[in-house]
Length: 389
Image (cartoon, rainbow, N blue to C red; front, side, top):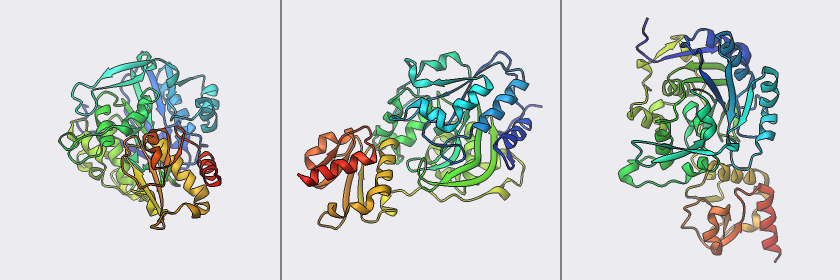
C-alpha cells in the first residue's frame, strides 16, 4: 500500500531502549540494503544521560539494534560539538563513547574533517553553507534529537538538530546573520537560516527522544521534563510538528517549522498527518516555554543581544545563576546591570559589561570580557580586576 499522508508513530514506555524498539517495530522502514547510515544525535554538550540536555544513548543503541536486524551493516554516529566543548569529553560524559564501543559502531567528531561547501539553490539569506566533509561517506541520515525548548528557536527538535552537521564555526554563523524585511518578512534571521539549511540537510528518518526532555531555559539550562515517549517518522517536519504539539505548542507558532512548511518541505497541520495512536494527545504534557529575555528571570539585568550564538547566551545564563548575588556594585544609575553580547551589538550605555570577542568593537563603552565564549568564572574575575584598579 502506498502511504499518501506523512506518518508519525508514537510510543510511550518506561525506558529509552524498550520504548524506542517498540516505536521502530511499528514503523515501516524502506529497503535500506547497501545504505551507509549516519546517526546524528544531540550530543554536543557536557551532560549526562537523562538530564534532558542530550539524546539518551539507549535510544541510539535501540536504533542500531533495529537497523542491524533489518540487515544494515554500515552505521556510524556523528556529532559536531558547540564551540568550546571538547568532543571526546562530551562523548564520554553523554555516554556515547561507551555505547558506541559496546555496539562496535564508529563515533565521529564531524569537526575533525575538512569542510565541504554545499550550495543552497533558492536561498535568500543563505546562499551556501559549510558542512563536515564526513557527510560524503553517507547517503542516509537519521536525526535523533532530544525534545526540548530553546531560547532562540522556541523548540529544538529534528530539523534544528541537523545544524550540528555544519562545520565548526558555521554553526555560530547562523546565529549572527542579519536579514532585511524584504527577506525575513518579520522572522528572525536564525529561523530563516534554519529553514533554508533544511532544504539541503533534511534527515531521512527522525527519531525524537522524548523520554526525558527539557523545558524553560533550553537548550542547556532548563528543567528536565519526563515524558516517556518516542516519535518516529520519515517526514522530519511532521515529526517536529507533532512533538511541538505534545509539548503544548501550536506548530504554526514555531517560526522555523512554519517557514519550512511554506517552503514545501512537509506538513505541519496535524489533521493532514497520519498519527498513531490517534488518541496521542492523551500524552500531551505542556512544557514551560523558554523566556524571550533573561530579564524575566533576572529583573534587574538589561541584556543587549544583537547576533549572539547559543554559546555566549548559555555562558551569560550560567554567569548570572552563579554570580548574580555578587553584582551589587555593577548597577548603573537606573539600578540595573547592563550586559551586551553579540556580533552586531551597536547600542549600549557606557559602563555596560561586554561579554565575548564579538563585542570587542564596543570595548571602550564598558567592561570588556575576552573569550569565545569566556567561562563564567572568567567574567567574574575580569570584573573583579577592573574594580580593584
